[in-house]
Every structure is written in C-alpha cells, then in structure tokens.
Image (tube, rainbow over all chains, first blue to last red; front, side, top):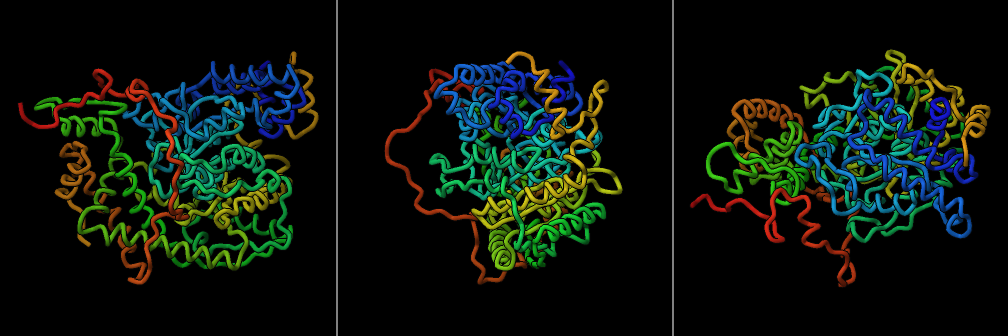
Length: 532
Length: 98
C-alpha cells in the first residue's frame, strides 16, 4: 500500500483527472494517498496548519459514488472532480479554522466560504487542509508565521519562500497535487521559484478575492500553485471569472487557458528580456539557468528582444509605501471586538482603546507591526503627498514601462527571484534584505499584469531550484500558459523528467520513485490500485 | 523628508492602536529609519505632471441590482466574537470614566 501510494501522489493533477475518469483509481484512494503523505512528511515540512481529513474523504467518496452510479450526474462531473487541493490559510473556509498565520485569529472559523472555495466545492475537489504562510501574507520566507516556519522540501534548513511557502512546499513535497495561493508582491511566484514548482499570479481582477483576507487591496490576487504548467491552467480555469461579490472582479469571459497550455507554441513570438531584472544582484546560478531558458526558447522559434523598463528600479520602494499603507488600513478591523483574540491590559481601566492596544500588541507579530507603523506613517498628514502620493505616481510610470515593453514583445521574461532559497533565519533580522527577494515579482502587482513562475533548473553552486518568470499584458494570461508549457517541455526533455524527481524523498524508508510519466510505473499503479 | 525617530514611532503606535514596550519602540525606530531611507527615492521619481494610479485596472460604476442578497444572522456574525451579549457584540467601556 505504501509503495502504491507513493506512486499515486507523484501523478500530476491532469494525470489524476484522467485516471479518475477512466476508473483506474478512485478519488478516495487518491485523497487517502495524499493524507498519508501529509502524515508521513509534514512533521518535517510544516506546510499545513490544519488537515481536513474527514471532509476531504467525504467529498472524495461522493465523487466516487457519482461516478459509480453513472448517468448524467457522472457525465457532468468537473474534470478535476476528486483531485485534492490545499488552500492557503489566508482564504476563508467553512468547517476549518482560518488563521492567516496570526495569533490574532487563532481558532477563528469563518461563517462563509471564499468564492474560490465555493468554486472548488462546486468542482468537487477534496480540500486537504489549510497551508502555512507569513502572518497576513507579510513576508518572503514563511518565517513570519505565528505557527512556525515551513521548511523547503529541497533542503529542510532552508526557506520555502513566502508568503505562500506552505502552498508551494505542500505541492513540492507531494503533499498535494494543487494548492491555492495569494500574490501581493510575489507570494505565489517566489515560493514557486525556490521550491521548484509552478505558480501563477493572474491578471488583477481575474480571480475573485471575496473571502481572501485583504493585505493590500490594490495588489492582492489569488492564483494557482502546482507542479506543472497545465495543472495551473486547469486550476485557474476552476477559480477564474467574474464574481459580483468582488467589485474589482473583471467582467471579461475567461479564456481557454487549458487549451493554451496544451497547444503551447512560441514560434515567431517576441520574448522580451527586462534589462533591469537580471545581471547585477542576481546569483550566478540563477543567471545561468535563465540564459539557458532563453536559448531553448530561441531554438523553438522565439525571437528574443531586449526591453528597458527604466522605472522598475523604483518599484520596490513604491511597493513598500503602497502595500503597508493599504495593510495598515485593512488590518484596523482586528480590534478585539468582532473576531479573534481579545487581550485585557494588565492594569488600569478597561477601556476599548486600551483593550485594542493590548490585543493588537499580543496578537500581531513583528513584521505585521512594522508594516502597520510604516503604513500609518506614509498616510499621515504632512507625509501623504511625499510618500503615498509619490508611490502612486511611480505606479503610473511602471505601467507605462510595461506598455512600452509590450509594444516590443508579446511576453517578458526574467528570473523570478534574485537568489535560490536561503537558510532559515539568515535574513530574519534584516527586513530590508528580506524585501529584496521580491524585486523581480513586484512590478507585475504594481501594474496588475499576470505572471507565471516555472522551474528553470538547479543552480550550479548550491543545487537548489531556480525560477523563470513570464509576464504578459493584462488580460492575456493565456500567453503565459502558451509559452510556459513550451519552456517546461523543453527543459524536462533536457532533465529527463520533472525537476522534482531530483528532490529528496523526505521519508527514510521510501527511495525516490521514478516519474509517473514513465508508462511502466503508471501501469503498476493501475494494476495495484485495489478495488474500484 | 525627515528621518523617523522613536517619538514618531510612539505616536504612530498610538494611532495604530498597538501598545509597544520601550525596547520595542527603540528597535522599531531603528528598523523603520533604514526602510524609510531606502524608499526615499520614490518621492523624486515622478514629476508633477505624472498622474497617480490607485488601482491597476480601474473599473467604474460597479453596481449590483438593488435586491437583498445573502445576509448573515446575528448568531453567525457573533460566532467569532470574543464577547457577545443578547445578540450583540459586547464592547469594553468607550470612555475612560466610571
């Protein structure tokens, strides 16, 4: 059974969907295999804050029953029905706690589901649990979680990126085939880069944020986390599209992203290298893998052009004014009255002001406090024009840079992060060094354009994953999948299989299992699959 | 732009309703001074004539039909509250008096 499970968990979501539809495996077997994997390795990885065993198995059993009964109901099952998924704990769910990685929401249960969660339920995807994150999604390493850091499955001593380190690590450690993340300045893409997984930040407004606990409302975006480009497209298709409950939700009909991923093609396409986003400050191994990807794309018929984006150098600074400003306002609601923690001051009168001050002091961690204070400063009288106002102007300049770049290129390309995963604790006491991790991902959030990170190989100096970022114009998410699928298949042909085949097994007993794309191991799963 | 000092942080912490110890104020003032210094260039990046962008993809007049949608019961709304009384949130004293 163990051997069987350890093969089952290595299939992609698309492969699982096919096997479920063909009756080669049951949704309960798949879900149980992932729950077993979580039980076996999450003590080391700490990707999950809550495991949703009972409900996940119930949903899986329901899918199996519908499929077994056949008829119209079975025909109408969503393609991902029975394929399990993990949800970042910033996204609210009925029936499971939502903590946002903060003590202030410890044990809190939402009375409603986020729209994306409703859509997962409508597709009958078993929700495996809630994943770890930096508190309120504020961080690039998951070390700012109030519930302990997540560990990178490639090297447990290293960060899994952040804020969505839990979702990325869960997928990289084969604890889930899919996960949901949120990306305000890179929180889906940068963890994807350092864990050797795929992550997509859709166009701003492309996926409803109703039910995502807001950090910076003009930047936040929910998106897919997966092991392959096609799997992200499949998930994006489930969660995307208009939602009247999010007033920033785009009305545009969703494109066929899955078709884009399946029919990837870069022949004749212009791909722009952003001068400002590579070279100085980027690790040599990151640069090498990036340059190799360019060569592969050129070989597949793409034309590589150079674009300048001169105002990107202000993006990080502007982001660290806009994001804290919006966060300080969004987090004002945690007041010790309506939900979560209430702490009473140790002495003196029990007024609401003093209760609020004591509650927020005890409930928020250092990074959250830093950002609230910084935001309060940037918005305060006398500084507003110089800080928040200027940052909003920079945002216009960044949008203009993107407009000029996309006049010369169909998609843009850069490394996702300047370095590979660093050691846990290494940058914890240097907030500014931590912020620099997001230098290449932030411009997309500032302009609202979509971005995708996919594995580009391992850096020579440390053997750790490198991420390649693709950026497309707003509303052109399909281009990311079209180009991403091509680059992924070219790279995997070089590696002889998915990059994650090279990651440590994490269990002492089970040796690394060959890729399930190998047809003989796929048959083995089918023949050992037990009763269906 | 002025540098941020300990008194500023103490004032901001009061505005933000976060109690801070003396040690925390010192540390925060040091860290914020470094961060504020690093974002200074932003104020010189754009000229007067550049308009501000508040949302990346602006939508206007986002309305819905004026019909009652889903609403929570008082009980549901109070499930996460630290204190409640007869179907309402219970709040500590608003004024600092007996």
